[in-house]
Image (tube, rainbow, N blue to C red; front, top):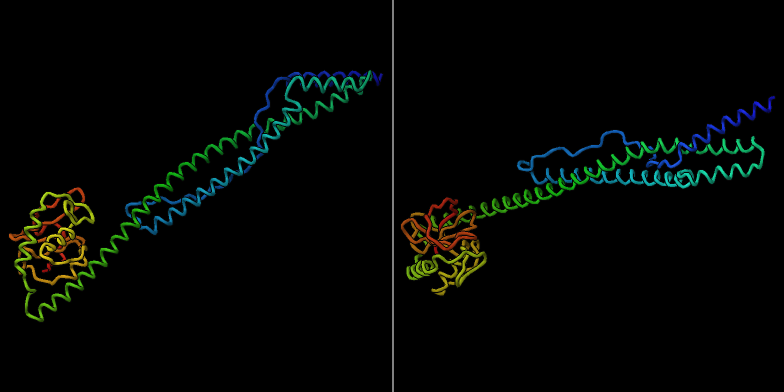
Length: 330
């Protein structure tokens, strides 16, 4: 009787196991992921106003962005490694338990191996069912983890794309700020040099009590030459015959009289003599904007000059809106 009860118990458990096997037959195993902690907040680069920030401040901000980007990318790599390991678990579970053909093969082998002894058959089926149950439980839990990993990877990938855009923007802002600061420093140095030179020249002129000698013929020829170029285009570094920059026009104008001047505003300043505004005569030179620009005075408060790219040789007011550094005579 005891044996009969045991057989009945085995048959009942076998029936439940077979129902479970049937229930799982044909089920596709979802993605399995290993649980990966993604806790704590990462440091984010602080916001910055590029319009008011210095090049050094922008450079520090750029370094913070690059560090944040590298950290985020490393986190993605770690999550992808976890996801790949989880997928390997899934693939193994699917191969061993994921189809009705595989399960039928296991059940058939278990039944046939135990010959005609029911208890042995049931025990074999129980062991197989328990193993299968454990694998499916693992797969179910891992599927949820996989979804979390996939979402985290997607979010962080979007974050990396955003950081790449911020890094590009910060690099452009740094380049602009650095160039502006360099230009300002150069202009300040040139202005200080011009002021020192002008002061020295003025002191020399005052101590001698005389103004630089005026060569009427060369000056008149220079003014006429400059007038002949009116309407011709400005080109940086050009000194004729049909295009000019500001110092190129001056060297050409005085070159017709055999006077050689260096094609540079700063050099021409050094090669000429200082005069006062009240001493200006046609043919004298006027320097502007930290000696970055120059023009030929033609009388009546007017000058001829080659202004800038996109413009042409033209007549303008002596006081044309740029700061005047001084007046020189050839």
